[in-house]
Length: 195
Image (cartoon, rainbow, N blue to C red; front, side, top):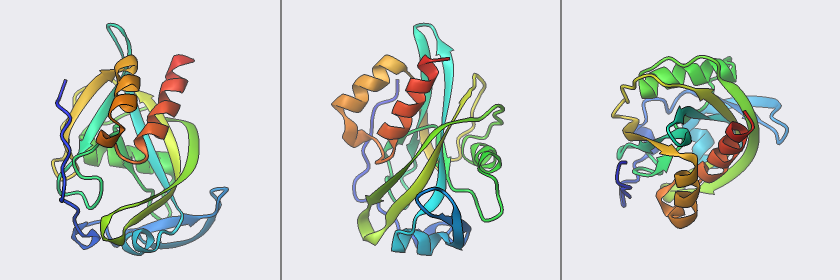
């Protein structure tokens, strides 16, 4: 298992993000589209927007395991923290599942089939440099047992962890995880248990 590493003081400006001009989908509290705005503006003004968080899982020797990724040190917020397998935003005109498949290829270097939505929630988290995540987050789940080629600009480590060990780590060391990870991973684990 990889060691948990917390990267302090690496908050980067959103201006260094190559996707800062992507048009994101603004939504209301019921996930109804209400417009679009550039990613940079969305995160500076804390506008509610559509997002997705993907959890890949596999059947391990002691039961289900989920794939965690550690955000690269160059990420503009939450750098060096563990999170779900992959996450991002659909661009204007993109369906959520299609956008998720695109981001899995871009971040993890693999192709995953059968993504299913297992829930959604709204959250808001404030970060350094006045950045805000205010998302209507769709939680997507898929079984996957293949290889990965993580993009080092996005992810600096991945690891499989059993459901029991993950639940314990979330309780004992929540500071090692992104703001959204506990809710996303709890929803995914609950869904996996009922499969």
